Length: 363
Image 1 (cartoon, rainbow, N blue to C red):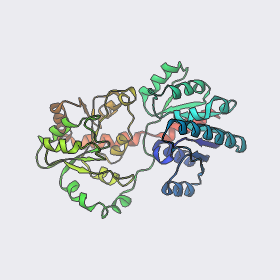
Image 2 (spheres, helix red, strand yellow):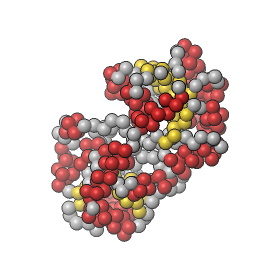
Image 3 (cartoon, one colour):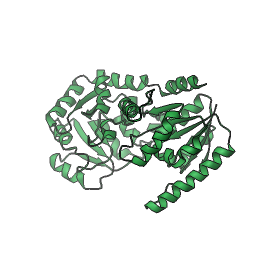
Image 4 (cartoon, rainbow, N blue to C red):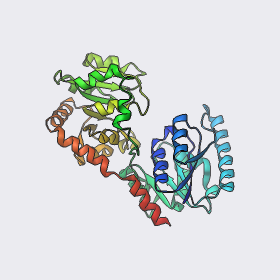
């Protein structure tokens, strides 16, 4: 089939869509992408895989008036593409894209929606989705609870399909080894200690890690807690008062950061439960840790219970240092079992088969 993929964003900011494009190509479909930004690495990969693409540079506005202009320009751009190209299906990613395209352009078209977020705080996007979701040939979302929420919100006869945010490609051991010299100042720490690794936004105000830090401080010298990511609020300074040996590593771009993921001992995944989108989170980090057989600890949210349900780690309350300490000790005492389950969780998630099965039903 010929599939036209449309995304009003920079494609490098949407890893789940990149994975979908790779899967579609591996399933033998022709793919043409319309996006609002692409970097050299992804462009080169797409060319090597036979993915054609064009860039409609309408995703850089910084004020509301300019954003409205960009929506209108993107709408006109897509209108020309839909008129000039032949395709079997249009694959649309994100409420932002749905809103920009609008119902009228999709009238009479066969299209598939990939909705990555709940968009609970974006009434304009929800309104746009409500106008097209019932006519979609298929709808994909990255987490089971989100599919149930959308079915209830939009009174769908068929619940959306679950397509977890699992990376389609993980760097090989050889590729990661090639990065060792570049990050040699961190390698010794990861090889000499049982590193408990947090990767992501560092902000005590929005994602308090104090209990995790306190729990790790109680462990022996064979453990280390590493926080990797941008610290824009000097939160690390506060955490180091709780645990002076804490190590902070600044932001490392993809896929380089997976070198340290592969060398970690336990991965930490935390979301604040202040929005439905975060309560029913769908982090790709689960599958990145799982790819390397790394057990995980998450805070007690419905979206993270998959970790404990599949034996890949434990969940505990975010502010309960005692429970977090027990979770670490439990994993440490049964490490191989947790590690095997984490790898199995990754292996058993087959997004390629899900997409193949759904598309085969559409023919």
